[in-house]
Length: 261
Image (cartoon, rainbow, N blue to C red; front, side):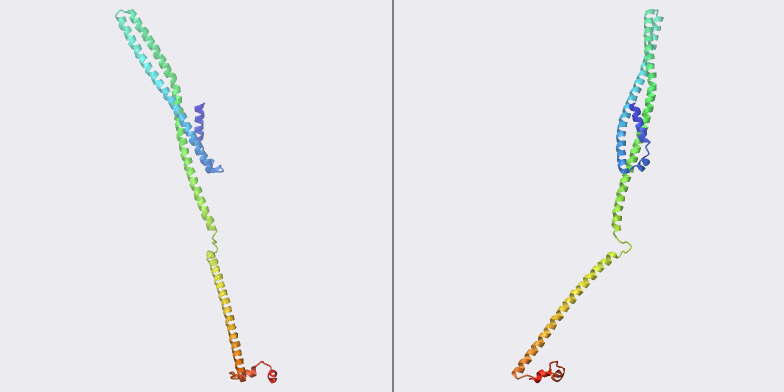
């Protein structure tokens, strides 16, 4: 029963359709890993059982050869004893002749027993030989399946890694706008324009501030001139201003104020 169980398991595993199993698996890689472990364990167990079966077969074969050899030896002994009995009988010694004839009969009986044992072992040897051949063939098929499984697993792992790498590249590329390949350049240019506008604003603001300062300086210079001329008038050394006649006609001072003077 043990041999049949092992043989049945080997046959079942050897006939397994790996592609079909993978198509129906939720996680092919995990399934392949598990199948590799199962095949490896079953192969090791089967090898042990097959080795034991082969050992038993070799013992049967050794016993068979021993029985054949014993049958031949007993046959030779029976022949020798019979010839010896004939010699004694020819010499008129009936007692020794009978004695050796009896020895020949014993040898023939043992020869027949050895032949019977050898003949009885032949079916077992034939059956065991057939089982061993099938187990060896099954083991070879299982090892071939294991190599196929290992190759499939390695291929799947490599494809999985390749797909993951391609997915990362795809995700990275998706971040780029293919509809406008200059979008990044345009954004950078817009940033520079804003910076340039900001600089122009700062320059304009600075320029406006300088104009105001110069205007203040001009107003101050005019006030100083007025104060100086007023002081000259009070001292009696005043000189007529350039364009005084036109200045009088364009003056906004009320003439009545001067009449009162």
